[in-house]
Length: 331
Image (cartoon, rainbow, N blue to C red):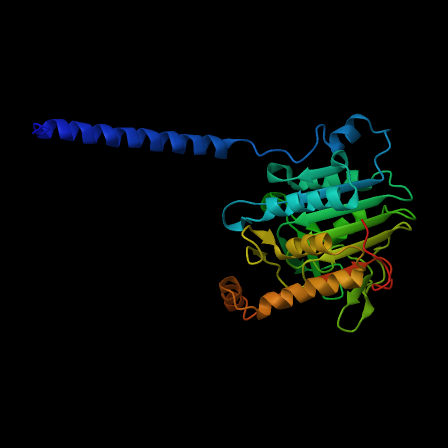
């Protein structure tokens, strides 16, 4: 028969095991902290398109270029699905629409200041020429404010919020229009995809498509004094919701957080080829309807919050009316 291990030795052995576990736990925490402190991986091919433009202003920019902006914010304003949105849009442009990495400028994190966003919007349309296809994408907060200039039919200006909007201010629909709509020359096409609250007419384009009545509605300034036109080009905007509505950042459609519009847009465009604008808009609305009518727990929870449905109605606006069921969606 073996001699029993003295109590003091058993205690020392137990203490040793506990100490080893504590060391392993601290090593794991330290590794996690190192990872979390790492600078986020850049989604831009270096040097970035804007850096090339600034260093060599005479060089002709590409015929296909895009500006993708994702603002996460801090504390109570934080949005969790923004980086996923930007990554999925970037992947869609490269894999499905032939955009090159070096011609896509991505702004995230601290790169989403008001100054940086405005400079990048100027880069997007700089020296645009016939045949150019431009994409402006924004995922973040949107806010509406009273219009004091008399150029809004609903009496409100729609705004997007940079990361520093509390100190530097928002970017209004009037400013967005003058920055990326006015400069569009003949045969230049700009697509804006805005996944934000109150984003329906955030580009202040002259025509808004009414999906229920299957017709374009006039969105020209009631005062008649403000310029909202392009310089001969075409601007088309796909917005997450109407001006009076909110847009959702949700994990209801997948395990990761995404803006509802961004997720559905990317999902549908990858699944279906050769869609018209009307087809695309109808399919987005169909998917939202399926969610609203579904019985899954995320749907039930969100319906309770938003009074039985996701209160967002994605819509299309344009600088020129066109047949949405004949014109194919191309970027």
